[in-house]
Structure formats: C-alpha cells, structure tokens
Image 1 (tube, rainbow, N blue to C red):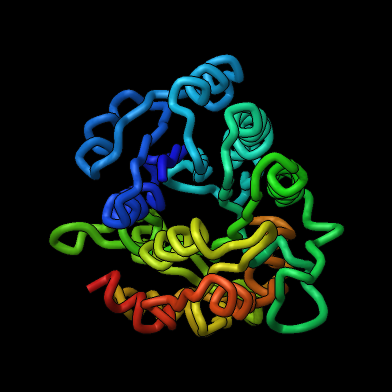
Image 2: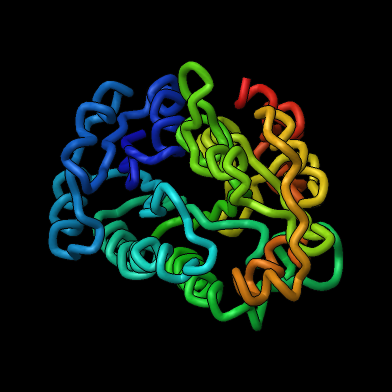
Length: 319
C-alpha cells in the first residue's frame, strides 16, 4: 500500500515508519522542517518537505503521489510545555489539527485515498465524571477549564473533519499520554534526560497537586505505532482508544516515575495554591480526569500493547 505519513519526523512517525516498511508498504514521509529529511530517509521512507497549512501545496503533493492511505500524525508540541500557558504552547498544534487536517482531508478525498487515519488524544478530553474507564461512546468534556478548551475544540474539529468525509474510511486513534523514545518521558545515552518531564522531576519542578486522584492511561510509543499499523487493515470507520491495560492514579504514577530516575518524591501542593500558581486546569489534570478503556481496539484491531503496564514500561524506558 502506498501511504502518505504526515508528521513523519515526530515521535510516533519515527516509530511507525520501520514497521510500515517491514509490512512492505511504500511510505512517503511528509514534514515541514528540511533539517529532518535525512532522519526520515534513514528510516526507510521517501522524504517530502510539505507545509500542511498550505492548501495548494498539499493538493499538488497528493495529486502527484496518489496515496492509497494517509496517516496524520501532525503536531508541533514544544519540547517543554509550560502548564501555566497550556493554550499558548498548543496553539500551532491546534492549527495543524484544524486547518492542516482540513487541507489533508480535502486533498485525500480528491486524490481517491481509501483510508485516512488521524491522531487524537485520550484522557483529559473525556468528561471528568461518571464511570472510571471511558469508552469511545462516552462524551467529551462539555465545559473544560479555559486553558484546555482551545485544544479540546481543535481535537473535536479534527475528529469531525475526518469522520464526516464519505469518500474515504475515516479512523481516529485516541492515543494516551506517550512515553518512550523521543517523548518527554525518556532517557538518552548515559542517563541524560531525552524528555523534559524527566528533567523537571529531577529538578523538583513537578509537584503532586491535591490528592492526585486523576487517572491517566499511558501508552508506550512503540505500542502507538503497532496500533496504527493494525488500524490500516483492521479498523472500520470510527474512533479507537489506544492505551495500555493499567489505568494509573497520579498519586501512584508520579512518585513511581520519580523513583525510576532516582529523584526525590514530588512535593505536595494544595489545590488552593495550585489554582493561583498553575490554574484550574492543573488541578483538573491531576485530580479529575478519568482513565480510558482499550477493549474496542483490542477486540476490533486484534491489537495488544507490548507494554501492558506503565510500571514495566517506565522502568524499561528509563533504564
């Protein structure tokens, strides 16, 4: 199958390309930064410098390449996210998820693409009430904190744009928070932090807010890639949660992560102080969000995460 992979030089893209090549797919890897060309080529894809926000350039590329499938992994998340300015740090990613996705889907429909897979997110976008483990049928948050609303709006726009197009099979993969190579939770050579989350925990810049009752469903970057490969052949039109099997309380995973890297346990910060220093969204992320069920993906995609629990995964990613 001829596949156009948008966001090929990102964390998931780098894990995904070798798996697609191994399955005998022909991959054109699109990215915006020319400096990433050698990286994408070395993984086995044909590099394509492409600005997804340029509708004319996207249309021209699709007409020339004529891909059978598109995988949209476009993001522009900065290396270090300032939680106090979450909306600012995700502004460009939100533009890629709205305008960029619109350009890609329009070009895909015109070029006769058969399948279109797009990255979304599982976890805090779900309504923070009701059942502990959210399924694809559960509602997203109708009233998120102001700092999170632009990002949630962008995710909803992306999903609606992909799913409502009748000319191809639209598939949404809601990945959980990622860890592993090229993510914010990873170590490079000689134990040097590859990700800023590790660096911030070592420097005591991440605290446990409130009681830490929020539930996170993590995902190793390799498992994100294997689920995406499975979706190419197994998925029907619709939404799939892609997470591990072990939903984690913040009060469990954050101290455990600190222990894995030999750092002191995180400080506790009361909600009242966090509301002033970070904002209401910081309290929500650490105390209110629900875990996510992966049963649909396991059943319909015939997919099982290799790292079924973040406990094992964190240890291995940080060893």
